[in-house]
Length: 367
Ligand SMILES: Nc1ncnc2c1ncn2[C@@H]1O[C@H](COP(=O)(O)OP(=O)(O)OP(=O)(O)O)[C@@H](O)[C@H]1O
Ligand SMILES: [Mg+2]
Image 1 (cartoon, rainbow, N blue to C red):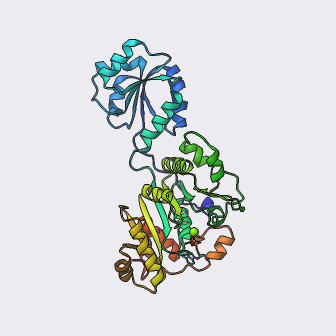
Image 2 (image 1 turned 30 degrees about the vertical axis):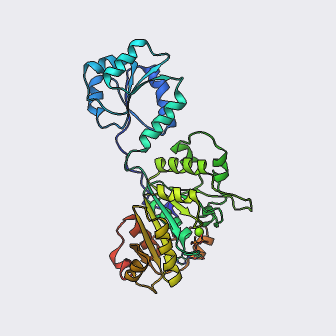
Image 3 (image 1 turned 45 degrees about the vertical axis):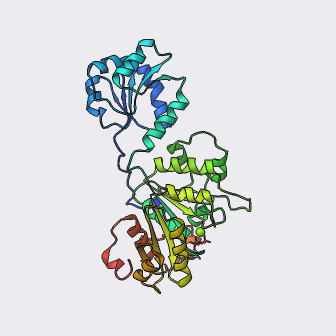
């Protein structure tokens, strides 16, 4: 399992940090916990010259009221997402200083704390290079969608935090598939009861885990369950901010919320069985998601060639794989579908995620 995998590494540092410009310890003590709640770890500049060095690269700049006037004198480049922050009510002159600095707004803490956390989370989440979100949907039932989604998550979690999100209430439960069904942690029903913004760290830490792979799943206990739009949006947003790779297992049933989630995925994979029915199902999915900018098929079985499937389904085939032996046994043992990081399933997920597989091992199999 990935927990004991010696190759597990810490994630690479994300983009340039948020910049806080202040020498006011009281302001810092108020501000830093709010930044943490937004899952932001800022860099602090205690004088204008240090601030100038990081000014342009930072996604957001927060200038303390104590240094705002001094910053104006250093005439930094005007930039977006610059805010002046103060503890307690802002004196009248601070608004003029903010204007001269090109700041968007004066933020009064702790009064505007909740709004401020949300703002920080929103502004930083849009940084490029955060998570890659991959949706997986079946062209037909039983195509191996859930299996492939779990395998993608297991592969990605070898090198960075990853999460698989189960959007199929009728499915077997991703937690079962990955052997974490007995572990404590958030499932969808807990998320549906949460109100307000979910921080990336809160979600990451609350989910049941296997190694670096978090699992957001359903209780499989006969309760009638359905996707709740607000919970899905919150979960996806927090998952994207807190992980390197997010994999979503999507049900095939026509549903506006599923279409919305698919649209939020950077990449959409259509699991396709190499049969007439399988390819017809993939073609239907291509038509349903015709506007998606990055959609491709994963072909299971060798009865049909990649070229034929590409032509008939109208989708690029990103990987073709033979059936994986020992799959049911690995899942029964709680190891998840990727029992080892070799074999047809592992090579296919590596190919999709862009990790170059061993060329010998992949010979004759991949697209
Ligand atoms: N790569 C694979 N190799 C061999 N067997 C597989 C593979 N992928 C899936 N299977 C088998 O196919 C069956 C269906 O798999 P899975 O539940 O992943 O499909 P699905 O497309 O998610 O199904 P559903 O439409 O019910 O959601 C399972 O018995 C599983 O073990
Ligand atoms: Mg499934």
